[in-house]
Image (cartoon, rainbow, N blue to C red; front, side, top):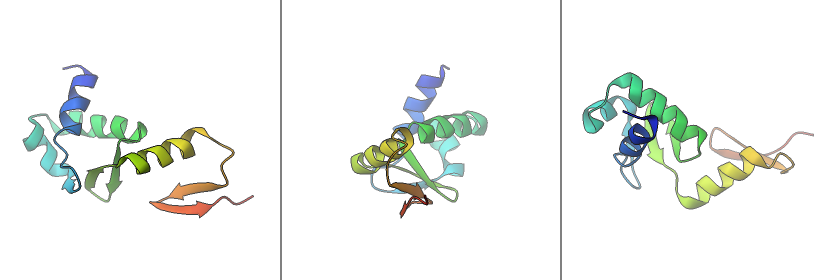
Length: 90
């Protein structure tokens, strides 16, 4: 299976407005744990999901937008650290 297809399957099996345990995804998606872990890493790098411990959830539009801004606009006066917006140390 192509990486894009695995990512699509994993992303669309994450419930909207709720979290799911990472260890539940192989059964829900019908994929092995290694494929799930690689897919989650790509989805997180793309700012589509967020993790809290072993739980995974979809980011809403505002969260995704803010994370992408923080990731690509290096001159912003703030950062996101463990889900908390903080002023950058200068």
